[in-house]
Image (cartoon, rainbow, N blue to C red; front, top):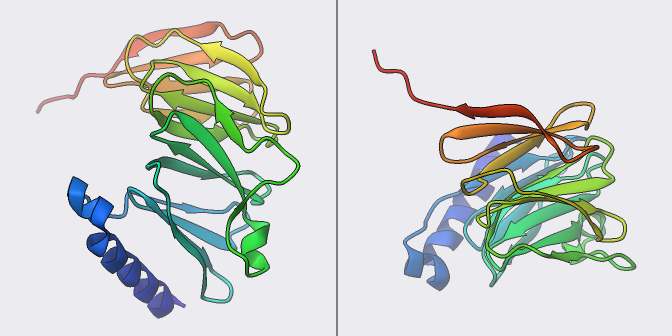
Length: 206
């Protein structure tokens, strides 16, 4: 299995380096790797490409290039959805179950699968622990909370004074932490209020 995975990663790197879009930007690297919570799938992201790998059968389930530029990926807690943050200011949801059926990643049918509202590139995405909500951070300095089922925007957090580069839910889903260039904010997800004074993060020098 390890040899097979290494071979897939190598082939993916070769695909990326040969991609015209990636050559134009000088991006030849794997930027993010995420296991699904059930451990059955591995998602690999480059600038414009996603590879989905079945860890049980050693099979490549999907390998596709996106013209919009992918900035972040995350699995839902039940492993059935792969969410992507994108440079076109959107969040998109993909049904990973289609990959199991041999037809690759497909957008969710019967649900809103493209969330729009950000004013700049989306940099990070995260599902709530119960999988019912999705948070997205952006270069527009906001975090937005979405209802996964309906695509409705539930909340907008605007306390960040810098670009939002990363975010994470607490295990109980009641708090979200978001980080910028050198500071960290904590918000109560029930009220949308900041519950922690901004922490400035400065590197320590020996």
